[in-house]
Image (cartoon, rainbow, N blue to C red; front, side, top):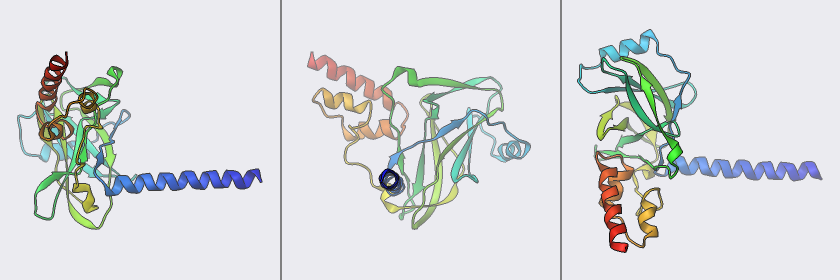
Amino acid sequence: MRTEYLKIKIGILLTLLCNLLNAQQSEMSVNQNNYNSDFTTNAELDKQFESKLKSDEEFKLIASPNADGKISVYIQNNTSDTISISHQDYKIHILQEAVDKEGIWKPIEYWESSECGNSFGEIKIEPNGVIETKSTKYNGDFKTKIRFKLSENNKVYYSNVIEGNINLNKFIMPTDFSFTWPLEIISNLGKKTPMGLQKKVVFLKPNGMEEFNKFLENSLRNKN
């Protein structure tokens, strides 16, 4: 009897996990990349970075599907100095974009900031050094092109373009992002964050957080 009960519990758990995975695959969701602290670059990858167009930008990105069903995003320090890249719980500030049916690049993920101050930190990268973070590889019936967008120091950097398949629902934005942190702070104050500002924050637009912080300060001042 105990064994049968355990089997039922395991079956329910697996069903819930499958439903969660399917939801993440079919709807726009939060990017869940994970920094790989054990990664070391290799000659082949270094050669790929060398072949990219010369640029004065601080970071170069290469996206590449890997054997474990994820997409590796390699980020190179393109300067002659050791520089840092910010992280949140060892997640780099990136998200995926895809080309829709009209040929327009649109986000298929969004970013949610942590409410815990201990979540934030920096990863140092040596000159020409490379780090790796692994992100979700989606599936679906719509064949498209995928790229990754990195936001750092109010600048945006893009990866190369790769082929991918997604569900078209990934392009559908929530009607309100105020359920995400820190936008929910405004909701708790009984005020609405303008949708344009919400998008700047969750889609990692340059200066998005600065604009939000000013909006928050004004909201707090008016409440008091």
